[in-house]
Structures are given as C-alpha cells and as structure tokens.
Length: 93
Figure 1 (tube, helix red, strand yellow):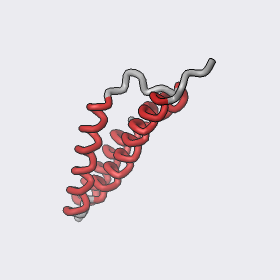
Figure 2 (figure 1 turned 45 degrees about the horizontal axis):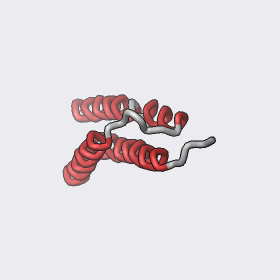
Figure 3 (figure 1 turned 30 degrees about the vertical axis):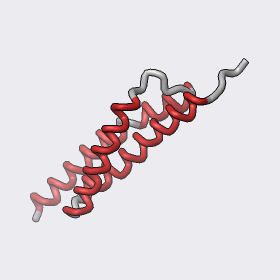
C-alpha cells in the first residue's frame, strides 16, 4: 500500500513538472500576441496524443495521468487558439 502511494506521489510530481512546463509558452504567446514560430501540426498531433492519454487515464482510473493530461490539453489548446486568433488579427498602424 505504501509503495502505491509513493508511486502516485511520484506521478503527481512528474505530472506537475511536465504539465506546467507549458505555462511559460502560453504566457509568451499571450504577451507577444503572436504564435509565430509555433508549429500548428506539432501542437495538433501533440493535443491528440494528450487527449488519448487523458482517455487512457480515465479508463484505468489513473489519477496522475488524468490530472496531468487534462491540464496539459487545456494549455496546448490555449496555445493553438491564440496562434490562430493572433495570426488572423490585423496589424496595428
């Protein structure tokens, strides 16, 4: 039982690190109002993979996998949405 708790704790720490590593990217795109240099294809494929991991986590009832991938998917989709939104914005004169 103690081993499972330790494994879950390790999973949540790993999930925190990998998930919140996207926060600086989200903030950078937001501050610059530009997604220039962001690969749409990479983020689409990545988002699909994260969604599938989220489904896996739900099916296996894996808390760290669910938590990490739910937040990561939200952050990745935010980057994509801002890239598309700011890419369509007209330049200011």
